[in-house]
Amino acid sequence: METDLVTPTSPRNTDGLRAKLIAVALDILERDGIEALTLRAVARGAGVSHGAPARHFDNLDDLKAEVAAAGHRMVANDIATAVLQTPFDDDPKAPLIAAAKAYVHGALKNPGLFSLIVRTSTLSQRNAALRRETRAAYDGFHSFVKQAQARGWKPDIESKLLAGSIWTSVHGLSTLWLHGAYQQANPDATLEEAIAGVLDLG
Image 1 (tube, rainbow, N blue to C red):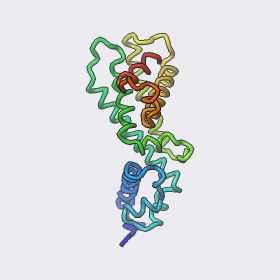
Image 2: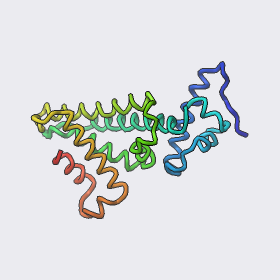
Image 3: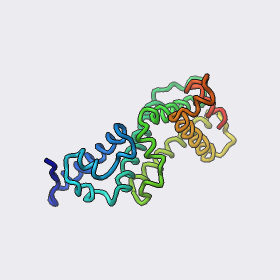
């Protein structure tokens, strides 16, 4: 039987249920896709009343924004881990290549979450977590661009402009690869070659 586990005097339980609702939404995305993500489905998956999510999120777009924010954190953590594990060697853009690979592989591993993140029109832009995590993710990527430039890669291009161009290209490659469009146009290219090409053109 569905129950609302939160009481007005239990803020710790309230925080716990909020996190659980976000986790359930992530599960729905990966299992059933973005179209299956509704407030009622999330409530059902969390085992709470249908009205419980309304106590934590303004509407479905607000919940989606929180899930997208969590997705940005996951991507940023994956990228940071990949970069830390990558030796610089003699290639000044080695950390940036690692960051790009982590971004693309993350999109391929979590297509539902990636689809949600890119549909910004369905996300509440008033959500503070979404604004914060989107900025943090981009700033992290920008820092890897600046590191590569400091080591001699494209030092004469304004770093924010270069970061934006590469971010856009890597993002576009992720989308095309997910839908099989890139492979149809260039069937002999590996994903690693495609990523390297994006950075060479950046």
